[in-house]
Image (cartoon, rainbow, N blue to C red):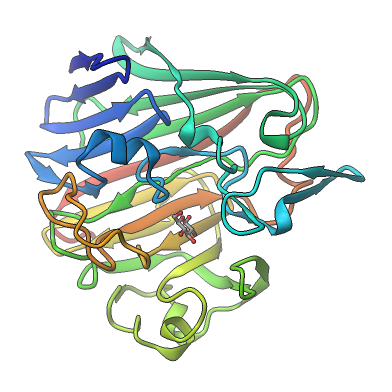
Length: 333
Ligand code: BGC
């Protein structure tokens, strides 16, 4: 395993490459994935320009929190109190608000596990930051396998008080660098999906209508023109699926272009699937393309939306979220 560090004006980037040619580039700003490649082939998309990557409202590859998703009117109801948050999408608070975890500079260090280097990011937030209750110490660890094209991300948080957290990573996948992901085949182990109001605020789960039923694999583009999606507020896939099961050992979702397949494992109960419906048209991307509609598929393991009590930390006990991507050549069964 090799690690290369580029400090670049205080905005550190780190690239780690393993023995099978899988590489991961990470950013201190946002504790995020800038890109993943295997044998030089791009697996993800993000803005190529660094400043754009840092400040983009697309959250490309970054760590998202304190609470991923939208909070209506930026008012968080938790433990019989209402906490006013900072809005960043009309009246609502999206992905932690304007100064969420994606918009922070994190401390970088390298830990070691079984002799392998583990890029690690740390951030301490005080009580009331962004309006959220309680001080929290966050840590994100990126474990790259020695002999497989596999990344396991650990999102960790610790607070002396109970506070709601919904941490995720926001990587957009596009296997092999196609202009868009419409011909990628997608499967998710889910039969229920969220419904939304006009502000994309979650309204509760229903059985998946056909165009949202990926419990057997379908191409992303096959039903994306369905009026439920194209005429609805989401303008494509932008839906939270409740996972039928989420034992960390078994994949909960799979994305494939035939030549490359990605398997996603997580211990989170839900998966937000977003098909890049509001692209920054023409923006140069890390995969050599310019952004177009549906250029990537963001797969974000999350907690049950709006269930803030279920998101609460247990005082004095660390909270863990695990997310693993495993890439394979060819089409997995
Ligand atoms: C949300 C989208 C949002 C995107 C980028 C996704 O997690 O579901 O609605 O546009 O993030 O901000």
